[in-house]
Length: 336
Image (cartoon, rainbow, N blue to C red):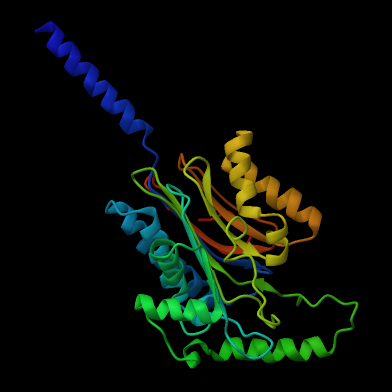
């Protein structure tokens, strides 16, 4: 009888230890970085941004809370942000030099290292859904432009008329950017002083310990000739690996591609033994700074640790965790 109770006690202890070691379900999201200094937005605008970030956060977290996958949580959060005209992704996409909207997106599964991406789509309502379809329903990683549109049609994904992506706010910004460019000399930077790196993204850790990451964007205002930035590039705009972390980037894409920002952070965690926060700080505040690039990342470790790091004046960002953390912020202040 004593051996029975001893065995029972040991099994309870083992179960308690396993439970304690289970990382907390967590989701972190961003809505872009850039020149987001206090005063840029009115109190009403700030409230609108924070409300939408909170809504996306809650939708993604509810998936995790119900035992859903990190992939489902990432997709759900990003779809909501794509459907909002507030952010430069989906409905709120900026205009290219030709006055068009071209959308990019990517998603990655940390458990399998499977990934999917699309670039230059113009009729797909939610590019993040198409990126996931590429990952799960094709043998490829990336489709671009007409090929991506055809694949979306085959997958039965929702498409819209191009005018769906038009917003007065983005059109005014486009016209103002064209005018400002005409007044600049060849030696002056083409990047506006108040530039915002418009992108949305999410990283999540589910109750099974699996990580996922996704990123979606409308690109850069006045981008030329089918330009593609870092958002759909695996290792630059997005990366996820259960052995290390999940990352979604937002910034001047050319720099993020050169530095393979997302993969570098995960590599430092996996091979260098760094914390997620230390790795993200090194890549953004040392490597990216040294090259002259701007932007930020959200990163989430396999243990539930997270970082929201940027070298710009601000970054739309939020986190919610099973551990009780709930934070939403825009500027350089501590999230709250």
